[in-house]
Length: 74
View 1 (cartoon, rainbow, N blue to C red):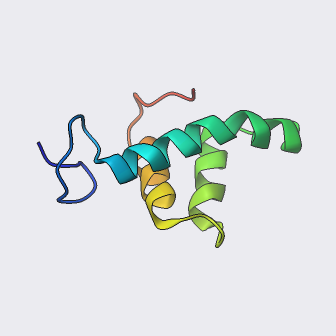
View 2: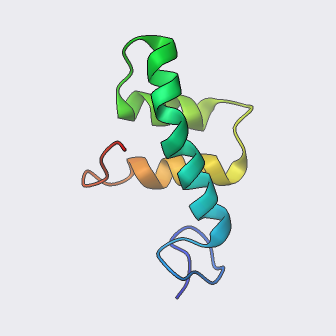
């Protein structure tokens, strides 16, 4: 099986790199939400994608998470 975001081999829908990026994005959301007071999932993903300090795989994973209406916040 190939990663949904790249051509690397994947055991699930994402390769190990993008799966780690996805896990990082999902696990950081509560901290960002607390810091901002109120933060919607879609706004958070947009901020992640625009943040110059965010790594490539996390940015791509954020785009993947925000690309489908059936992807809910963690």
